[in-house]
Length: 304
Image 1 (tube, rainbow, N blue to C red):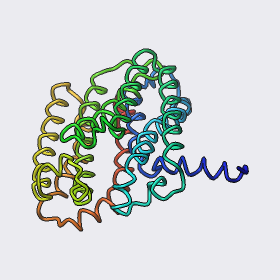
Image 2 (image 1 turned 45 degrees about the vertical axis):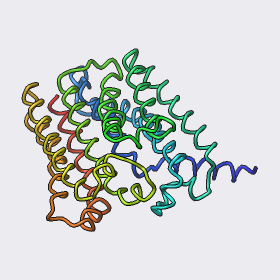
Image 3 (image 1 turned 180 degrees about the vertical axis):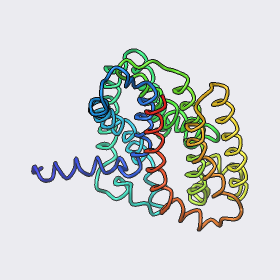
Image 4 (image 1 turned 60 degrees about the vertical axis):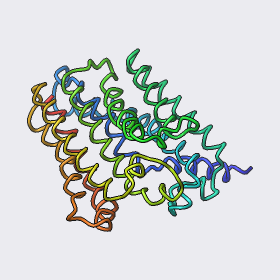
């Protein structure tokens, strides 16, 4: 194989990690880091900004590797579903990489991420990143394959692409878990569960036709799934606000975290058709998530 072919293969393996999807999840590690970042030991705004960037840069890289491994391994075992739904983000389904190559690549980058977070986070960093990696792989890999198990498909997603990412970030560079960390862990668990329910509703008809019994399919209709989502979103908002109030978290942080939960709840009310929900997820939600993540990160650094 030529050098050009090898480079193309590596490029395809990274593209198979769905780079456009992992940015939002990667930011959770950075937000977790922000809950324990101590700017008081630095003098001057420039020094604080420089040190923060120095810490964030490697965190972002290895957080991308960790979350990217989850999407990569998922593509290795979702070929049939993605071909049926016409998704182009699965490069295994498109024949650009093989299943074996993707599995090996996913394991390697996940191990690299766990090694790094163990190095900068100590025992807790090792514990949280290992549990996160194991759950992320078990979500897709048979025979366990959490994504085919009702309720577990939502809860596991809330853990490995939610709470655990916050905890991983918080333990880096000698960080000590605090009330803001716990609040974000619970809040993003609920938020991640909501996003997963969105995904399940988006895949409802394909999963139903292929006989994949997700939480959404087990509810027997898309409309039932919508009302389940609304009930779950309402409960998530109540729990997030109550937990934030109990821990005496700053109202600005609580408001920002609840904001996205409320937006998703409103979008899934009967006022919005399935097509309008699709347009929101494709065109509005990605931009909104970036702006929301930046605002949440800055407010956390300033207040905490």
